[in-house]
Image (tube, rainbow, N blue to C red):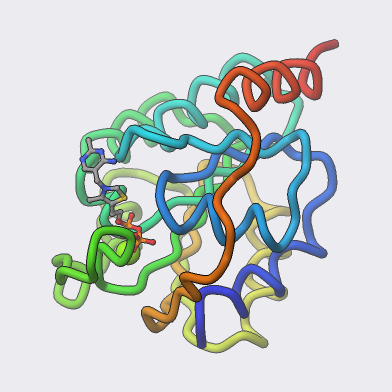
Length: 186
Ligand SMILES: Cc1ncc(C[n+]2csc(CCOP(=O)(O)OP(=O)(O)O)c2C)c(N)n1
Ligand SMILES: [Mg+2]
């Protein structure tokens, strides 16, 4: 499955959950599938979507919070998995698009062809962690994890297949911040 297919499966499942997206192609591709004010695109800094998502989840424990991460991002901030598991926000769902490469910077291989990131998440203490490889598995896995107590982790294996003709996120960082804050206020 291509990453874009995974996004087309995920997008209709989202309601108004705050969603913190990893930098690079993940933000860019998801922006083109479904731009929403609840999307916080981490435009520049790699590895930080997970810790920002953790902060959002802890600040608003009654609201489901999503992180849409990449394998390279997770590997860069592996310690954040332990922090998430230890803080244990019940409302946090950590989704990872795993294409086994740093596709945004030229498809250098990551370690996720050998390291099963969902096993890492499970072993540090995520309540549940699953891996899917086929598009039709995404909805049932997501719905199962959505019902479960968090933090939970869903790894979606995809092939590197970004369509570089897709445009970049058009909002400025300030606009992304402001509309995200507005969407989670109150
Ligand atoms: C701290 C930091 N290091 C490196 C980069 C350059 N960079 C941007 S995206 C990216 C790859 C991200 O990999 P992954 O999370 O697997 O997402 P993919 O590109 O495969 O969709 C890299 C290395 C950056 N933006 N910030
Ligand atoms: Mg990747």
